[in-house]
Amino acid sequence: MKDFFSRSAQTTVLFLVVAGILALALSGSLGFASQGFNSILVSTQTWISSRFGAIQDFLTVPRDVLALQQRNIQLEADVARLQAQVIQLQQQVAETDALAALVKFSRSNPQSSYTAASVIGRDPSPFLHYIIIDKGSNQGVLRGMPVVTEKGLVGRVDAVVSDASRVQLITDPNSAVNVRLESAKREAILVGSVSGDLFLDFLPPNFTVEPGDVLLTSGLGGGFPPDLIIGQVINIRKRDSDLFQQASVQAVVDFTQLKIVLIITDFQPVDITPLVPNP
Amino acid sequence: MKNLVAFPLLTLVVIIQMAIVSRISLISGTADLMLLFLIAWALQTQVQTAWHWALLGGVLVAFASGQPFYVPLIGYLGAVALARFVQGLIWQTPVLALLSVTFFATMLMQLFTFFVLWFNGVPLVLEEALTYIILPSIFLNLLLALPVHAFIRDLALWVNPVEEMV
Image 1 (cartoon, helix red, strand yellow):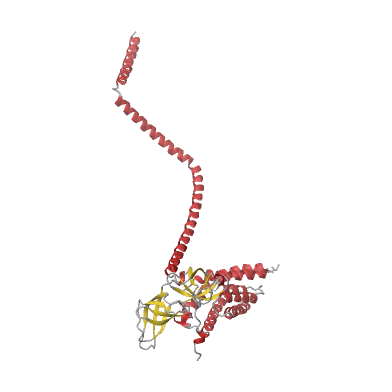
Image 2 (cartoon, rainbow over the protein chains, first blue to last red):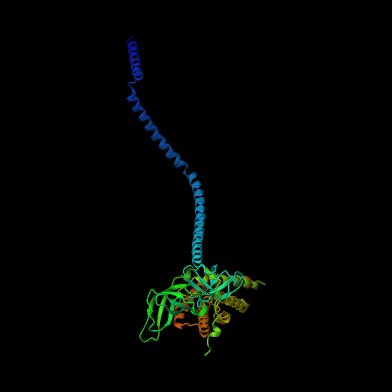
C-alpha cells in the first residue's frame, strides 16, 4: 500500500513537473532556457564537426598531395610558358621602341632617304670594328653609304653582297671622319682606336676645345653628309712638349648595343682620291 | 666521305663566331672559334685533312672579315703547321699540346694580323694591341680550347674511326 502510494506520488509529481514545464513552455516563459540549450548544442556540434573535418583532411592528405603535385607541375609549366611569352613580348617592345625612334628620326630628317637594317654580326677579327647588317645590293645599298641610328652617326658601308653589308664603325682604328665642333665652329678629324675609343687627333696647340663641346660631321671630304651628331668632347690631353693636343670623345651611340640601324640611301659619297696629290 | 662535314661545320663556326662569339669581348679581345676548331682538329692523330680544313676555314673567314684575305689563310695554315709539329713532339699529353698550341698560335696570329694592318697604314700601337686585344684574346681562347677539343675529339672519332688493337 505504501509502495503504491509512493509510486502514485512519484508519478503525480513527475506529471506535475512535466505539465508545469509544458505550461511554462507554451506560455513562452522558457525562451531563455531554450536559447541557452540551443547555444550549447550548436557549439558542441560545431566543435565536433571541425574535429571531424580535421581528421578527414588528415586521412585524405596523401591523395591530395599527388593531385597537388600534378597541379603544381602544370602550373610551373604554365609559368615557364608565360615567362617565355613575357620575354618575347619585352623583346618585341624593345624592337618596337627602337623602330619607333628610328621612324621619328627619319621623319625629323626628311631630307634623306633611309633603309632600316638589323645588325646580324660583327667582324671575326677583334682588330677591326665592323658590323654585318642584313641589307645589301638587292635593297639598294651601295658601298660608302652612311649608317646612322636615331642618336647619331654609326659608320659607313664598306662592302656589299646581295643581301648583307659590312659597315665600318667610326670606332675602327682605320676610320677617320671630318667633324665640326659646334661651339668653336672649327673643323677637326675624328679617329677610332683598337679599344673602341674616339679621339680628335692632331689638334693644333692654339685650337680651343672644351669638355662638353658637341661634334657634328662637317661634310668635308664628301664621305658623310654634314650635321650628323657624333658625340661630345670629354677631356683634352695637352702637354707643353707635344706638338699637337688630343681630345677624347664620348660617342652618343653605344656601339656595343647596336641592333637596328638606318642606311642613308640617297647620299652619294664623293671619291676624292684622284684629287689627292701623290708625293 | 665523312670529311665533307667540314663544309657545314666550318660554315656554322663562322656564323657562330660573327653572331655570338665576336659580341662577347674581354676588354676588346674576342675568342677565335675557327682557330680553336682547326687547332683541335690538327691535334687529332688519326686526322689526315687538317690542311684542307685550314684552307677552307681561312677562305670562309677571309670572305666574311674586313681584314686582308691572306691574313686568315696564312694564319690558320700556320696554326695547323704548329699544331702538327707539336703533336708529333708531345702526342702523349694532348692537353698540354692543346694549351701550348692555342697560346702560341693565338699570339702569332694576332701579331701577324697586327703587323699586316700596320703595314697597310692602319694606325695601331703595339702596346695597346697587346693590352686590349692580344692578351685578352689568348685568355678567351685558352678558356674555350678544352670544350672545343672535347667536341672535335668525338667528331674525329666519327670521321676517322680508330681500329682497336685486340
